[in-house]
Length: 159
Image (tube, rainbow, N blue to C red; front, side, top):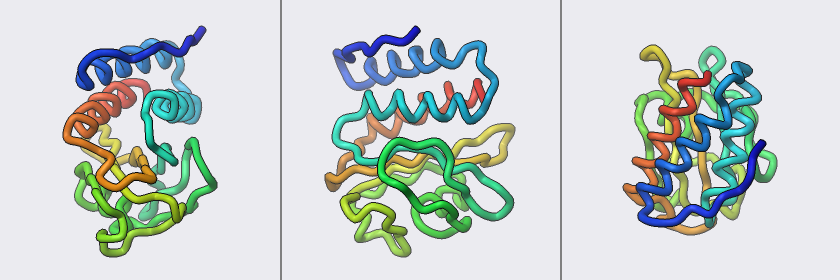
């Protein structure tokens, strides 16, 4: 059913291929946990130099850990706290070049140096976030942000 492919060419083309691969992978499946799980696994295979990738799902006034790839993580994050909670509160992507410079950063993995968090917005409501950490400072470029936002839009079609 699934084979790993080599992504080649400009980064924007690679992300477009990734989004198409995600769409093909999730088509026909409606289970949210299964789709978030496969999305995190696909990103883990695609993205170099990351140490954690996964989802937090909004439940009430906090984010609750969802499917992920990486070391064990914080289970609950209040809205407005840390990078994930701030992304929910602002309903926008947050790219942190150096997590040590982010006020209130929640350190689940001491190896993490940079982070990107993209809110999952469905029907104008934030329903969760995609969170990706890297052990390298300034890991996430504008092209990464744009590509990951396309990835999330594709994912949302299956949630």
